[in-house]
Image (cartoon, rainbow, N blue to C red):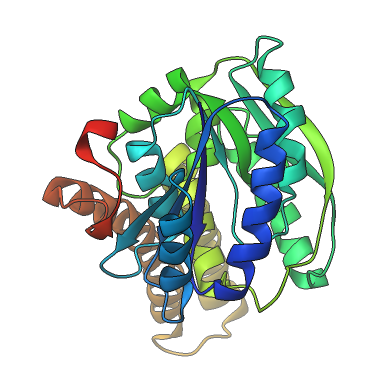
Length: 310
């Protein structure tokens, strides 16, 4: 069985056209399948559209969150409750073509555990988003010790052994593409051109993209902490040079303002680096705090997935 996991947030106009494409693609695999929609606190008619589909098709499942928990958490919920021996992760906006699913499934049969889709072109997206995405993936690749594939999203197919290992990762700040890269296993890619959205506007705001970028970097790299330490040494060295300069101005050039030297050394250098260091350390401490509280990742308000199906 193939489980297709579709996180949705305010996508009522895209549910039906994408559903038809997913169903047609799955039929080509000659496998049984289920399609799981995770409604992540939509404020439109997305959930009612999904429930109508579920009344017509037994293979349509849904998980309705009590509020918006985020894209990565929605995908995690689908992985928690799916029963397939393979799982496809795909967004509901239609930018990732479900027509690739048969080819990705064939790659699994060649002996791979993870097959991800790598973007060649990104149609319908602003130059700013394309540029920042490229920069982020390359910076993340430099900062981490694991090989996270460049120019990829969450669109991929994975085997059950990967699903089981992802479920054993309890961290609250999810960055699934990084977690799957960290797991290892045999991975390969299929390249494609990403299309425009079927309709509507993207729900991934700049704030959400920054949050995802922060989760990716802090979850898989200690470099920001090292950067704070390195910056401390650099600023201390610069402060030492400034001390020499101020002493030179005071006693050799005789050109100085009373109190200026001590204020510049103390405030500009030491104060600045302390604020930077505290901010970076605070980011990591907040993540420790989130995990210590051990609250559930998500709250399910309604679902048609029976407990025996897990």
